[in-house]
Each structure stands twice: as structure tokens, then as C-alpha cells.
Image (cartoon, rainbow, N blue to C red; front, top):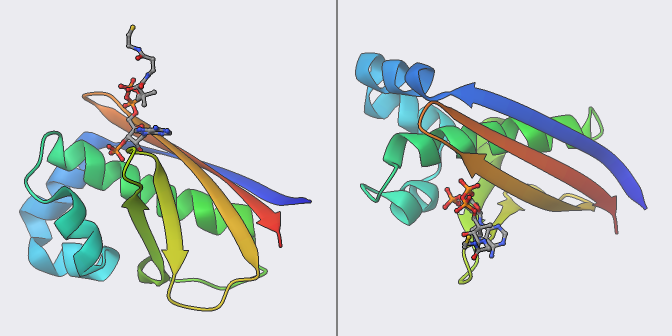
Length: 116
Ligand SMILES: CC(C)(COP(=O)(O)OP(=O)(O)OC[C@H]1O[C@@H](n2cnc3c(N)ncnc32)[C@H](O)[C@@H]1OP(=O)(O)O)[C@@H](O)C(=O)NCCC(=O)NCCS
């Protein structure tokens, strides 16, 4: 059964500004090391960071208030075929299905939560 959906959009420039201003302390507040390693200095670095930020927000929306989560409780990674998925630091009863897209200026993510 679908328990909730969430969507979020991020302007890439906002992500760049936050990193320029706060640097590693911003990255450390939002992302886990394995998320950074997954995309580190690859192509479209800022777009991919922004997409992961949007994905975390989308997951929080999809789960509503059922599971209070911090951004770093959510870990966004890619399967070998490139498809995004998320795992959690806390025990979450729901399964999450994720989709991500990005262009030069914006990143968008959507999430569907399914009761397991
Ligand atoms: C996977 C695919 C849909 C990605 O679309 P895109 O327009 O290139 O890129 P987008 O910015 O919209 O999406 C990128 C995101 O798609 C996600 N993605 C990648 N592979 C995926 C897959 N197999 N399944 C689901 N999502 C996938 C990733 O999250 C990626 O972002 P990330 O690398 O930051 O994690 C595309 O590469 C593809 O395979 N299309 C099939 C049709 C085709 O081959 N078209 C080309 C000829 S016209």
C-alpha cells in the first residue's frame, strides 16, 4: 500500500552558494561520507549534490510525520545500473522508491513510500 508521496526542487545556484559560504561544514551537516564518495568530483557535482538534497526532502515529505528524520538519517546512493535508492540510519517500516532528475540550473526528486 502506498503510504505517501513527496517531491522537491532545488536551484543549483543555492547549493553552490551554501558550499561556497560554509564549505565542508555544510556538506557534513547534510550528507554522509558514502554519499559524497559516491559522487565526489564526478561530472555534475553540484547538480548531483542538489538532487540528493532534494531527494532527502522528498523522502521526509513521503514519510510525513510518521518517522521524524534528520537529513543525515537518509542516505542516497545509486544502484549499479545508475538508479537511485535510499537507506536509513534508523529503522523505517516503509520502503521508499525514488526518482531523481537534474539539468544545469535545477534538480528535482520524488519519493514514494510503501508500507511493508
Ligand atoms: C536513465 C536515464 C533515464 C536518465 O535520464 P537523463 O535524462 O539522462 O538524466 P536525468 O538528469 O533526467 O536523470 C539522471 C538521474 O537518473 C537516475 N538514473 C540513472 N539511471 C537510472 C536507471 N537505470 N533507472 C532509474 N533512474 C536512473 C539517477 O538518479 C540520475 O541522477 P544521479 O546520477 O545524480 O543519481 C537515461 O539515461 C536512459 O537510460 N534513458 C533511456 C532511453 C535512452 O536510452 N535514451 C537515449 C537515446 S534518445
